[in-house]
Length: 582
Image (tube, rainbow, N blue to C red):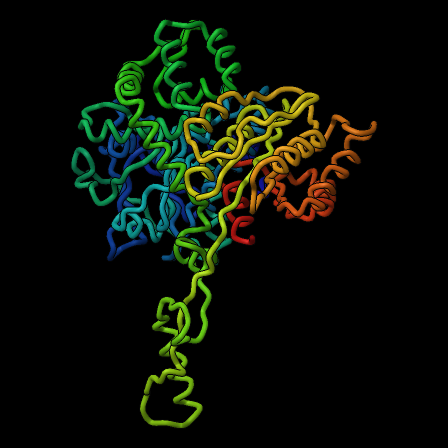
């Protein structure tokens, strides 16, 4: 069974057989149903009135899919509202729990697929078709979760977690899993669940009234695309789709070429082979299908009507789209760096470096006057000297002086062995692009695979040169880490470097020897040479290999960042943490 934190017993699915049938009947009769005491579920839109928050009105004539996502067919979207004590529920934490719950449900269902339960056999439930919104934000639970930030939208969800999902009747048991997951996330934040005293069935305007306060840009896969949208809305949709596809494709050019192949009606098998050659694969094709860009029928892949429009936009505006993605690479920051949640920002990250507070020096280089700290110093002195009036003297003055950070030369040492295929290698390439665009540092790239290592990109600030080099990186073979470290050292010794940092990205341990018959010992020997050179060193690796990677970093005199998965947000955070510590 998957190693998940959510505590859901395998027997739960058996116990949910009858409740799932009852729930399906109520939803089919356009009714709302209570799940537990906190949740209202229906395929309709729900409303509450501030004076009577304990009463939930289900608008029986307003379909949730049509109101929220402009869908044509009724009954495709299930709407869940999980009510709680007013407070800020972190939508990112909820999304993690929901993803775990779907994974557990699919695992449980696979065990009992041969039984005649209400969750009948079929395709797994896809987390891509589940959206969430809370008082802190929202979006697709498998997306960036940077949406739903409009103030009116967040305020409207301070007392409940809103979930919309495309869940067919055969899988309604999954809704119970989603509710349990959301309730667990709410409880973990110290908020109480709120009981719904009654559900009232009424009627509203045909579209549910004015929804503008509750509408915002989104990355949802539930929205019907292109239907009656303005040119500006279509452009936003195209750019959003390009951004989503960047998770599965190496470059926009790869997306464009893939759509060109689909436009000729390629067979699914041929398309998968082409995607595999470009470093993508089955997941990329499924993403195109989920986003409504291609359809797969009879073993053939074809562009949908929206896909034709999308391809046309790529053909006409490729340079603009590439510029848009470069801006996204540049501005990308992990969620923990949001204002109010970031030590780096609190310390003044940005500009020429972190700020240091110190007493004002009249003959010094001059810094930034720290107003609040100056007033605090004067107030403290006033209390200590028992004065009746606050006066600011020269001795109270405080200033911020920025620590000037020396530019670095970062050599990315990327494991490109077979196990890095797909998302892991794309995340490493994303980090390379991000560092090149968001820092003043020069960047070099060395890859190692099979029985050799290769300098892919010499130290540079040239974006086009870096892009061309990154497209050449393909994953295959074994893991010659010692050779990679040696190649990296040899290159840096011959280059003109002043502040070098070797940043190793790997998902495993060495499997190919360099000096002896022991690949592990050889890599440690090469790491010791890094320490002797005086170069900076850091490793981003996976938890299962923590023990060996810690030894490697000790030998190299560097830092270790252990991740659950080589995911781009976590890798960017680790890289910036290493830069800040130098």
